[in-house]
Length: 310
Image 1 (cartoon, rainbow, N blue to C red):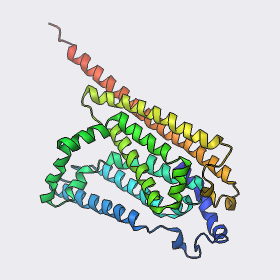
Image 2: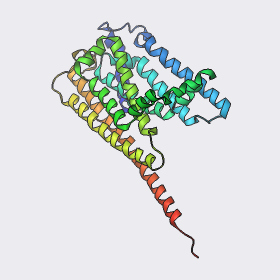
Image 3: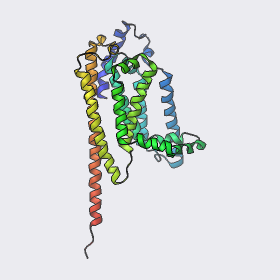
Image 4: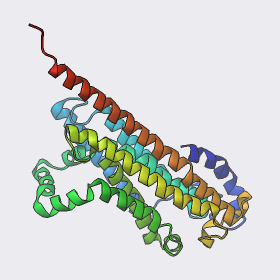
């Protein structure tokens, strides 16, 4: 959210400067909002399905059971962040300013994805279906899908896929193609969010019970450390580069007093510093939880070994 606060003053400057270049009919405020049905329809369907499933669960099991109030709040917070990132003027600006595009992606990967992963939406979404369709959820336990899910939900796989999405989409030819082709642009957003959602879900709820559950936190710390390193390297490359990677990305940089290279460097700093801080903060959370659980397990083991005298 720190990164978003940096952008708010820039958004306020847009109407006067952007109209001079004919980039949008900014006399109409709605022109800066995105109404792409390919983004809005899935977003609203997911929200409606989660709401219906939650209500059915609570009518059946009682309020707060099956899905807690905290997880419902996390889902709707994440849903709102996605909606604002993909439909608000930030999305319009992100097509014309590298810094805004970086903020948009960080909101998807570092705010919305962990919130929705924490919400664990599979239960409410399954309950949103008619009762006759709910057994279809067992398809995930069939051999082919179970094998695929076992591969995808492995910490190494999830971390690798998340890292590949970050690096591949920042390759200049592919990034430039995403700016020119709306279908590729949608795929870019989907890749960032889906791989981040998988990554955070695995860190929060990946395989492991008992001692394995405590090890999961340790593995999560390692995965976050690797992610901090490679995302920091990419951010540093963007920041320290002496040439512009994607010439068409900084169309509005001059209106905001930046050169295209400075716009790119600011985007790199946002990836390098705020993103690194957020990943490090998450690693510290997992470290705290890991040490706390280990301490509790050690204390319980000592109590079991104590025998009453006599």
